[in-house]
Image (cartoon, rainbow, N blue to C red; front, side, top):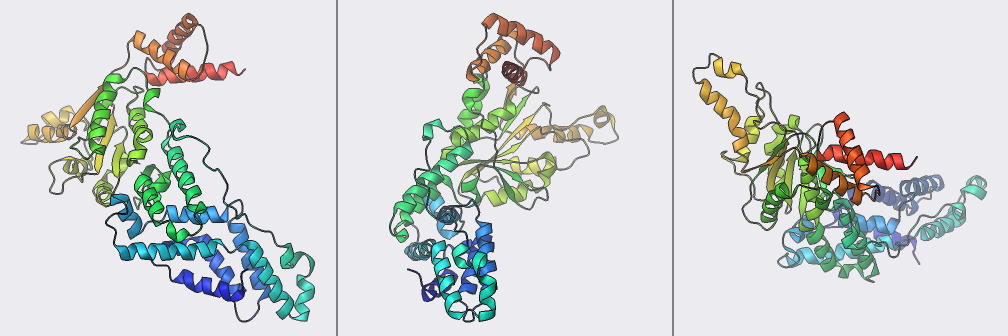
Length: 457
């Protein structure tokens, strides 16, 4: 049973967190600490206690409090989590491990304070110390016994899906969080969970990189933002792309194993599956530490800074630039060119660039470039065209012929569970392609989506 003294002790202990002190910046934790401050203050403030309780309750409405605390630990980023991602628990300074254990004990003390404990202590103080003129105000609806209680019990069996059945990178991260969370809670003494946490970080990463698998750079270029609804496409969803996949997969495997690997430019017509293949890599390799960072063409200027930041994270990153090309007046290509190869600062071993383009030459070349007044016009042209050469591998995606297109249609239909006579499916697919964008994997997918929608009417 909690007492005012034990809550005061808890309040002081939270201020003494050493390794996981970053959780003290969380708004819900701050709301809880303010509740403890008000509840344990020497002078009773009935209205203040009521307001702080309701404010905290509102902040965790529909949130399981204990699960929330565990998630804060899983998403923390500190010296322990970074070292655990890089090398596991072996080799981490024993002093750090000792402080991790101590912090976990304090956080468990926090988790063990229930909303019922708070209500009981508030009731005791109200009954013992409340002024007579306030009692009439707080009777009935405002009395602590009428306050709502927040959800505290960790949900049992939260991990219902098997790892083999997951479809996307974000589902895999959720599965790991739920699985490790159940094990974490089942330990009577959280201070014994140091090794478990280390295993979790080494498997999933830490901080925002344990919460998300795909990222974009903020519009102002100030940092990474997680993408919660990343494309769930898998390699086996991409049909008749075996030649292109073999090259990209081989290079990516080499990268993940720590062997030399090349930046890749994926070139070809629209709808041939270039971007889909890059996004599918994330869902295939997230469990091996791969993360995807999408960089817009107009953000190329921050590429050097981004790569420098990623080099300090002990995970593997593919920087994905979709539809890459430059006008003749753009200078950003020089930043990218320098870092791809040939600059003073080399590309870190944990970062690759995969870019897609509909143009074989990424920088637009005009006849003016050839016929202008530049004395060394040929050198200027060659400098512009050399950007594509800085990608070690070029993978060409060709538009499918008719038979390949029809195989794509049949394969996507099978994956989508669409049943239709084969001859009818082929005939309608050929009619569709005449009216819609030509033959491509994208056109085949759009055709099947149309048939699936049609079947619902």
